[in-house]
Length: 420
Image (cartoon, rainbow, N blue to C red; front, side, top):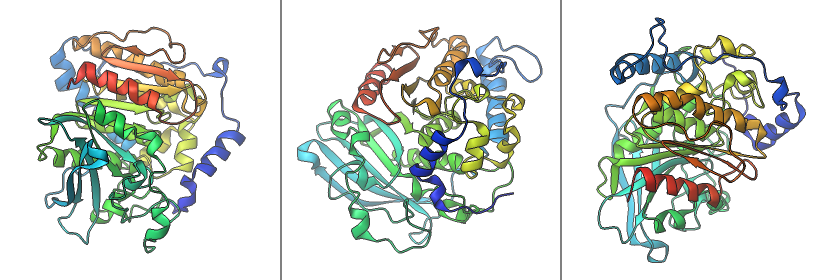
C-alpha cells in the first residue's frame, strides 16, 4: 500500500543526510556472500546455447521478470498521441546548431499531459545525425544559457502539484545545469542532443500516481509501472517522435541518464530495442549496481525513501535481495548485443562503483554468445582508465556528477559504435 509523501523526500538534502547518517555498508569485507542468477540459465533449468534461444526464450523471460518484480509494466504507446512543433530555428548558439522544440501530447490534447523535447543538431550537418537522448532534473532551460529554451510547464522541485508556474523564479535556473550536458562538445563532434525535463512525464514524489501521464491511466497494480518505468516510457515516446524527424538518425539514438535517470536509461534500453546505445552514469542501486552486494544504497533504503520509483512488488526484496529472481547484470544483458557504457565515480560510494563494474562483467557471457565480443576487463580498472569493447566502463575521479570527462568518453564510445 502506498502513502503520499511530501515531494521534499526527493531533495538532495534528504538524500545526502540519509547517506551520511545511516549505518550503511561501505566495507567490501562486509559484503554478504551471494550467488548471482546465471544470465544463460533459463527458469526451466535449460542452458541457453544459441542466439535463437536467447532471442525467443531467455530474453523475453528476463524482461518479464524485471517487469513483474522490479520496474513494473507500462501501457505502451498511446493511440491518440500527437506531436506539435513549438519552435524551430537555424544557426543558433553562434551558428553551431539548429534548434527545435517539440511538444508530445500524450492524449492528443494541449490541455492533457505533455512533454517538451528540446533538440539541437549540428548546423553544418548534411544529413540525419546520431543523437543522444536523455532526461534532465530541473527543466530544459537549465541545460544551457540559450534564452530561447522554453520554461517547463509542469512540476519542478520545490513546487507542489497544481501550483502556478512562477516564470520569474524558474528563469533563475537557466543554464544552472550546463556543466552536465556539454552541448557544444556534443555538437562539435557531429552529434545531436535531444533532451526532456523528467517532471513533464511524471512528478518525482509519491503522489499515488495521480499526476503527470498517470492521470490518463488507472492506478498501477503491484506489478504496474513505477516512476522509473514511466520516465523510460517517456523516452520511448520521444523516440517515436524522433522517427519522424529527418534531421535525426533514429537508428542511431543513444539513450543516456545520470543517477535515478541512469536507472531509467538502462531500463529504457532493455525495454525498447530501438535504442542503439545505452549509457548509465552513476546509476547505483536499481541501476547498474548489483543489489545482492547491499553496498551503499540498498533495496530497502531506496524503496523506503522513494516508494514511487519501482513497482510495489519490489518491496518484497527489502533486506531480502537474494530472493529476487533477477539482479542488475541481467538488466545490462538485456541490451545485448547493443553497446552499453557504465560509468562510476570514486567518491560516489553510495552508488557502489565496484558493483556497477561487476554488473558489466557478469553480463559479458550474453555479449559473447551474441557475437559482440567479451568485456575487456576482469578486475575494476584504476580511476580514469576506461576499458572499452562492446561494453565500456570507467571509474572517474570525483563525485556523483556528469562531467566533460564523462562526455568525452561517451562520445568516443559512440564514434566507435555508431559512427558519424
